Amino acid sequence: MISRSRTTLPSAVTGIGLVMVAAALWATVGVAVQITPDGGRIPEVLLATARTGIAGPMLLAVWALGVGGGRMATLRRLAPGPLAVFALASAIFQICLFRCFAQLGVTAAVFLTVCLPPVLACVWSVLRGVAGLSGQSAAALVLALGGMVLVTLGGRDGAAPEAVQGLVNGVIASVAFVAMSFAAATLASTSRPILFTGAGLTLSALILGGLAVGAGQVGAVDAMPGNLGMGPVLLVLYLGLLPTALAYLCYCTGLARCRAPAVGLVASMIEPLLAALFAGFLLGEHLSGAMMSGCVLLIVAMVLLWRAERD
Image (cartoon, rainbow, N blue to C red; front, side, top):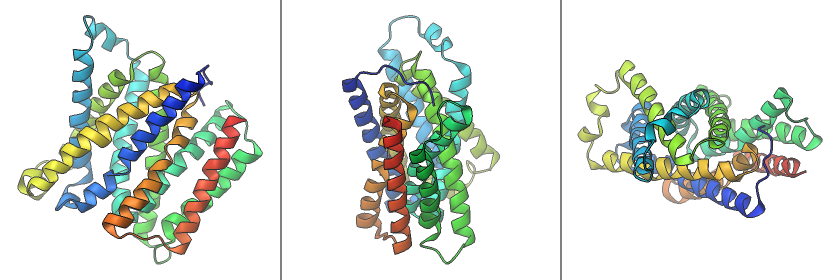
């Protein structure tokens, strides 16, 4: 992990609160897509392109309005390496997340992609030699792996191909989210969150747009929101403004105030709990006994990781 900064307690608490606000907004994404008429017909790459294409430029515009002169000089000071990692990881995360929603359901996908990243961050820190693998961290890793399997396959008929694909997409999304979080923490040391978030999401939109064109999704008549009614148009606006622009700004700002990226990742675990409530009330999704057991294991793993991070 990145070395712990001397973050004051009030600042750290504010940071955790901002991460939780972001997580609450992200918890609405899967449900919003599912309840919107024809929302599920929009290809995941095109949907991700649209939400980042709204969010990134809007954040950059707000930043530019609040800055006096020297905008280009400030932009040039952005670290290109971490910014590229942020943009690419964000693009990969969103594609895999939308696929995971369709393959595993909203609740299981969110539990997997939120609870797995803190464990991956812990493992990455151990591999880099930044932190040792304590007994609590090792136990968290074992529990998280078991919980991941139960959540992913517990509601399916054995190892159904769709569930396995969902597991793969969930793991890829989790790795991408960890990479994005570490890049954001690095960028936050030299740049304002609104600037690097806006720039990163704008670059992400360009990457996703290129993928959408290459996949022929932009030219698909039945994939265009204008041909599907107002529902998808409102969905894209909602996703772009709230769970993307506002949520990513809150997350990156909060992450900059946390003493380490893993703390912010753990704080985001409020998302699966809210997503499960939304999915239960609005989509009628219910967890099987095995999936509930897996969720409990993931939560216990996060608590152990949190305790290990505090020690």
